[in-house]
Image (cartoon, rainbow, N blue to C red; front, side, top):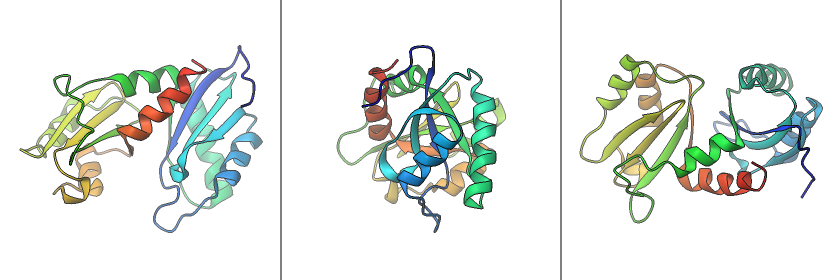
Length: 189
């Protein structure tokens, strides 16, 4: 494992549109693109667009803009980027939103959605209107949580329908992936 600079901030970039919909990017290529941008300690986690890296830049929004501009130029299509510090990822993974329940086991799924900004009240209400006996939603800062009491593939709510209700771009990961990333982040936070 590469040594981490103590003066750098450790981040995770959650990328949307990586290895879905015919957009295939090898993780070695993605690491190379982040290194080209001057980031250090670049690592990818699972081939779904999760990149850990370090930077002396402390403005996450500026990093999102920089990475998005670089990737559209290099890949030829828009990739939305959602940056979190390692500490943010650890907090997101540890958050128990649904009455303290941990809806991971069995035939249910817990998904974390990453947003650029906290959702406005009207958007939250649109999403909550989708809830029912098999789907629940909750919001915390720039994250939202979707608990489906069945397999996600059996839910009546699709990612497209959810994003329409959100009214903004998002990228989603299952909580198991987020927790594994949090464990890796705890080594550097």
